[in-house]
Length: 178
Image 1 (spheres, rainbow, N blue to C red):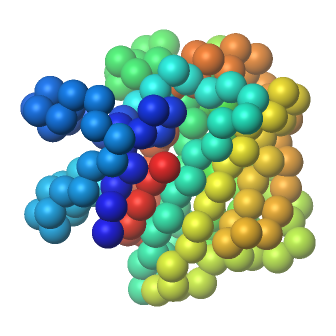
Image 2 (image 1 turned 90 degrees about the vertical axis):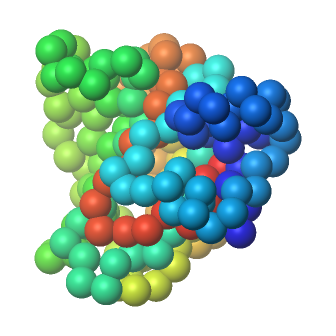
Image 3 (image 1 turned 180 degrees about the horizontal axis):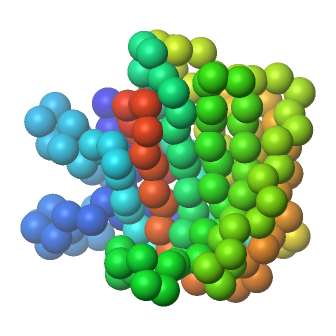
């Protein structure tokens, strides 16, 4: 299993000694202990160079056996861990299992947008693997799950290059990021 962490445009796992020792390696293949440490949930990783049209983020994982929910968010401001002021969230995807909803929202200047909920079907199954792709286009993010396009989310954060962090939390294991 490989983690595409230092790929030219990929997600950069925050781990200084790893980055220093490998320089700008194209592909990092850590051993099992490293892999579990790098991709632990909650996860936060840097999107090198921020988002731009044509760029995509891929999250592969396995849903927990008895999940409540999990989130995948694209956010602005690597160092804004403290909640004052809250960092902007360009896209928050939340899979909620109680009512089988796949929700989308954003937070701009501290205010959350109304959640968008419509989807053709709920794509996640407990204890099963999945692949989420977030394609960045000029006007919107286009979201695919397991190769099927599910919905679009029009940009609320207009400065795409400021979207520099992927955050993942909840009832899942991450197996690969790209």
